[in-house]
Image 1 (cartoon, helix red, strand yellow):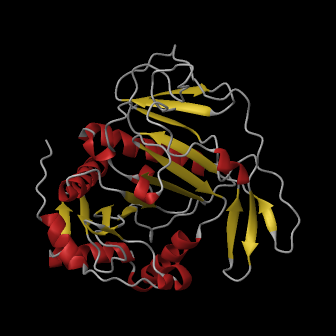
Image 2 (cartoon, one colour):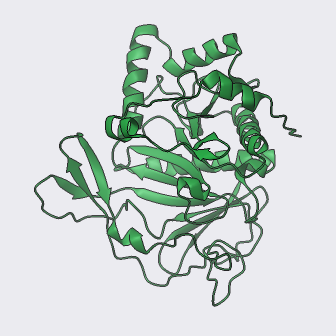
Length: 361
């Protein structure tokens, strides 16, 4: 993996990655010249026992711009300023211009609830220069590079003493709230382990203390034995519709043997994980004969410097579709109670995806 670190005119970092050497003469462009002055802050929710971040300046971020405006296109013009330079590179990572968390945040208002500076990091990961491409459409070695980039960014960001958890994710499609149409994901780094990963971590710790193995490790072995909901089974990675799916067509992807973070993957695991990911994403598009909307989140161990043998790196993909014409939105019981109500069986949805043939060279 080749990399080149640059600095944008407004002070944000830009890192370019490639499978081939990158020219050191590239310069980091930006649609902005002045640093963003707004700083996020946290407010404590005493009834939910959790922090919420506030960054009102995010109201000014670009939302569903006209096709002629694309800040991630490599061609720059007066009407189309760009975030990425022209040149030979495969993946670009840069700090979000409108972050929900900022490592330099240092102020918080005094309120009737506890507050704190919204420290953290928010980065954009541009998967490719081809704005018409998708993550699942990229060659396997390019997807491997994406996984390597997630690993490097996890290690680099997680080394900061104020960062406790790093979450790479991708929103794809307007149906799940994408604000810019180009192949990209994001990385959020938090000053604490967020509520959902924290619940997963507690469950994993309890299971590991009792059985000496990870809970996802045991579930994966059970799914491999059952062979009912499997979508991909390789030498080192697996993908399946979980028997406890909360969304129609929900899929989990993971290395078969547990690793704590992206940085702990072996070359063989990374290679097979790329094949599993590409297989699932192509099945999604093939099932609907259109670009399939989803939220893909990658869960890994906290970045607190401790060993976490209970943790198991994995992706959970949440597509919104229930039928070809009806979207699955959260219902009252799901939003208000956090109690999901499914009207589709995971086995039926797994069968639909299993029947989609994909070819990967």
